[in-house]
Amino acid sequence: MSKAESFKQAYEQIIGYAGENYMSKPENWCVVHATKYLPQKHQDGTIYIPSTAMATNFDIPRNTVHTTFNHVVRGHMMGNWDDSPIVILTPYTDIVKKNGNPAEISGVDTYWSVNPTKGLILSDRTFIIQPSNDVLYSINEHGATYKRDNFTEEEIQTILSMLSPSELEIYNKYKNADFDEYEIKNELRADERVKKMYESAKDKKAFLRGLFEESRFDILSHFLRDAVVRMSMEKMGFVETNELSDGSPANTAIAETAVNMGLYATASNKGHSGSLYADMENFWGHIRTCFYGGFDKYGLLNAPDLEELVVFIANNIHNPAMISIIKNLIENKPVDFAKLYEDSFLISIKGRNFWTNCGIENQTDEIRYINNYQIPESEKDKLRAECQQKIQKYKQEIAYYDSIKKISDYDPYLAETIKKNAAILSAQFNEWYEKLKKSDDYQSFMNHIRQIYNSVSVQNVMDNER
Image (cartoon, rainbow, N blue to C red; front, side, top):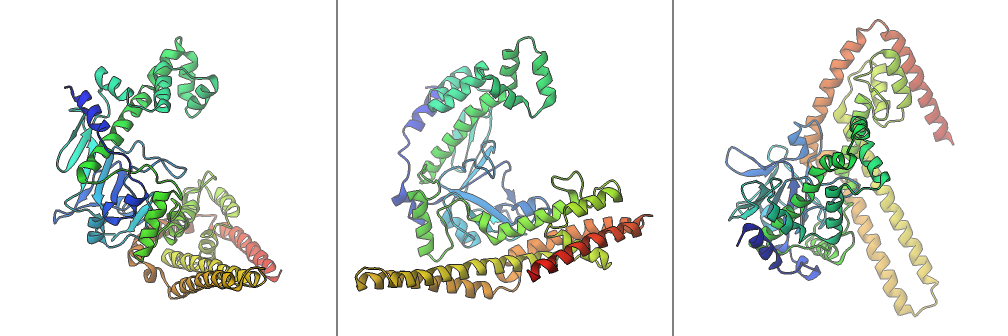
């Protein structure tokens, strides 16, 4: 039997997908991390996944490592991992023993806040799937491989016979260059050079077939990667699930199990985007916009002259970081980026308490409404009790947030990551500022930004008086 035939046979023998009953048990949770990089190794031999902060030498203050349960992450509006060639599998129970509980659990986005010197520590039972063109696929005791290219004709035909109708349709479209005119325009608009080459090509279909050959083989390698992941998961004693959309029964079961374990959880994929970790990353984004521009062509650190710099500041004065930076420039004080982060963090805390208090008010109004229901008193008691339970939960949240006075109170790992990033930002900014002060037009520049700052300050006073 050829390797292609054995692959198809092995894949077809896999049992069905896991559902909510299976996913409600933590011992069945297989942590999955799709990435472009192999795990790293500490001097003591332990392997780990670095956070983005660690991988960028803290240029980006993202200290969380994100995973899914029992399936490879699906692409969504915040990113696509189809081209991530390496997939790391490890038991959830092992990860918790090595790293403690995650910051938040979701079947589609469980993430850990990691020690900025250690990363997410992996156990000896970790399984690594990675590309290798030696054979179509291989699965051993501690890992697996799969082809990314150099497929034989038999291997291609075998994989094609296993694709879904929609996947096969896309493959054939790339193979035959069978595109509608609007699809060609969409594909070529990102690169003017390629567009001109297409327009001058004598055999346009041949040009498109060559252009999209890699895309065609990506479909094969992506299917093969996910198939080998599924077979590897089975070898480890886990079952893959395909039901982990927002609010799906399996995802809800995971969240309910986690909450019953006293952990923070959601049945959504939006947990991190609404977290304090994301708030700090977003504030870093505001600082980076101040430094290098966003939609603007330039920022503080790369504007070609002071005239452009003044225009940029005026256009971005309402950036949450800009007003503090400009205030310090006017006062000739160094910018304390660590304090900017701390101030932004406390604003986020206040925001959460505001909305939690709104929740209490809503439940209080609901109780008043219940009192006027034309229903039996016993039913009213039940509904009122449910509202009181929610109010009590909200009060606990408020008490928790009231106890947080600084980032380290919330998460020491996040605080350490922010501290390292703030040091980098300070070094970059101070170098720029020292050059700025030596400019011949420095005083004129300062007069301009004082006018900008004062106009904003006056507007703020007027807004507050309203």
